[in-house]
Image (cartoon, rainbow, N blue to C red):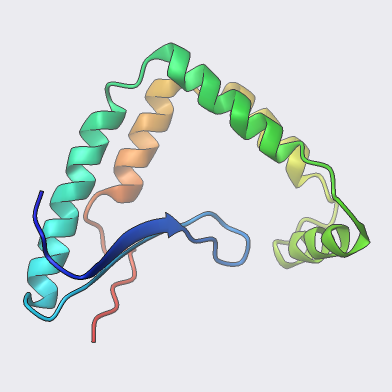
Length: 131
């Protein structure tokens, strides 16, 4: 563990209702390239941790996600937000929930690990903001 900055964290960060993840670090002592390299190392370490995930943990995570996807709209405002979001994603059949559940049901641990590794590896598709 290294102390690189005074503000650091990560969070779920959806864009246009598509899943994303945000990693951030604020520092006055290290250059943007040094911070970026350190974050890449942390991501690589976390990928190693994920490779040790047991099938029991995998099934539990899928169960929790399944419950979240099946969440019923609490009120009309939440429902309208969900439906407008579906329209933004060209889901004019409004069946994204069912499609997500189906994809989740068929998703296997090995396949998921491959996809996560591909998404979090050092690629040009990421957005890097530095000031």
